[in-house]
Length: 454
Image 1 (spheres, rainbow, N blue to C red):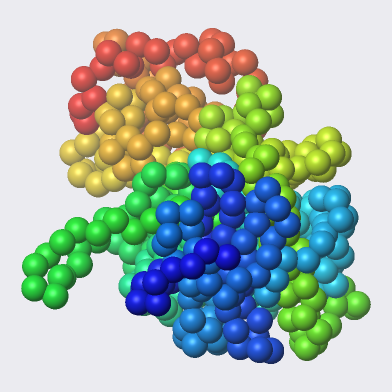
Image 2 (cartoon, rainbow, N blue to C red):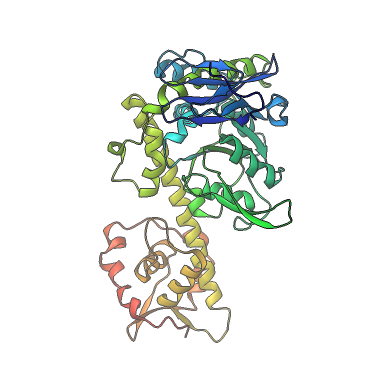
């Protein structure tokens, strides 16, 4: 052990990676109320009360009296423990989840590997989020706690929390945010917590906030919010870009399995700690070996979906589990797109009705409708909003005919009667004609229209 001057001030440390591959991690033993530093890399991890770096700097663990640590708001491993193989560890995690939560088999597989991902997330540049969505009593909070209890440096918060400690905790501990009741009372654009979700799944996009120095000067500070996040909520976000970051399990669709305890038994905490210890050993063993595998990029999926799916698939061992996760995630994406398409049709109907609020307005061009729709919603799911596509939505999805007059396609006031019959909306797609056949081509000329309400 290297010696160091007694007066040297120790640096409180949560986690470090040294140039030689040595990894340093904070651990906490609740029975002894003691924190230490687990140090490993080329050698097996060992526990240290303090640790001296090659350049002479002295590292010490965060104090066990830290409010987040002693109250287990922040969950840590107590020491590294052997885990066998990755398959053994995943099997243990899956069995633990099955004992305490009622979710689909495919999602349980995804959640097991997502837990693994939280322990090695810093090997990647992009991450997905995990979400449990359902109404009161659906079991989402139970699932959030059970899954979150296994995650790397899990930090538990809720919609009742103020923003400042969340920013500081994420920036300091660089762990997993476990967030309950993530339905905010304010609009998504104004909610400070949404900024964490919007910036937190890609490395290198900190959130800037203004701090006041002891000299009363204003100084911008960058808070690192990159890291895995698991949320429970009742609804969806209006921000479609944010929605696309989540892998979601819909809760409460069936009765609770009879073998799941109504209340979590005391042994659950011990089981979770034992698994965290094994997961810490997994981090020491696997972090230096992992990177995103470009060969797993699926050209049939969107760039965004590939971006967040590949890191997860890169830690999965076995093609069967990869396929299970792919199918679940692709199904999530299909449902999200279908939901947004339904919202788009509803918004188009609203915009159309607004165009005829004036009694003098007898018709509106498809070009004008397209411009108003773009102002309202931006792009459509998976494709740009063009007059051709809006014409398709009007005719095929809303059952409203367009009429060509002087080189422009128009919708007449009589269409409002059609909007009053919602049961006839949303006819089935008509195949190739919707994408470029005869019906679709009729709207092409409207791209040159002036977009004026007549």
